Length: 241
Image (cartoon, rainbow, N blue to C red; front, top):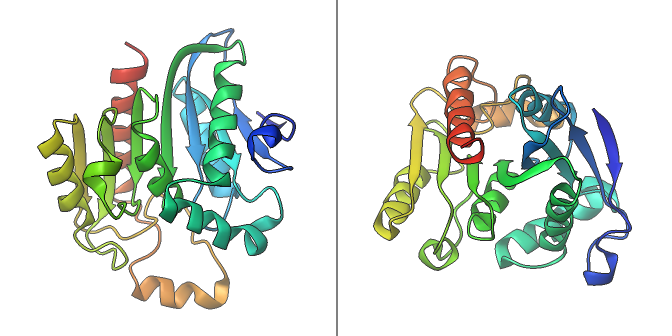
């Protein structure tokens, strides 16, 4: 497990001048299928690191890229969210840089998946038709025009929480759109879960955590094991085959 400096990789193409990530490596010589991981709105924190370590333990060369490398969350969050809303911009360049690094690392089989949480789930959804072999979307916001944005998408597994007040109806809408386009998908809404339910501890500013609980945001240990099994089964099907 190590930190990776990607700063010199994507500047020429409009990426961030400073770009870092956390690389979680499986045990053994490899090569391994690769996974690009995209963090939630609070950044690449200890929770994201544990998520990446979990994927590595399952056999995937996992790079969690830090989209806030070039100034921290306070300086980068708004621009990153604007990029997500527009479907283009520096954040997408940085994600492309990270994917290229994984594929050129010499340790990848050539198969690659993308996984994201919260904000990162929205990015993972938009990247599903951009050359990935499989995508895992966890409580990610749907694009404004999902039919157009998701045309030609790779197989998608998605986990949502019914108590998530920030994404009402998102699971049903995503399943309907993907099914209508013939995109292989496995979308589930967990009845007792809310937003960010795969986190193993509460996150975000402590002063806001009571509000987060009211909004249905926070860990759900009961739903988490099944959600992770769904992710790991999905990637095994499309990345290990």
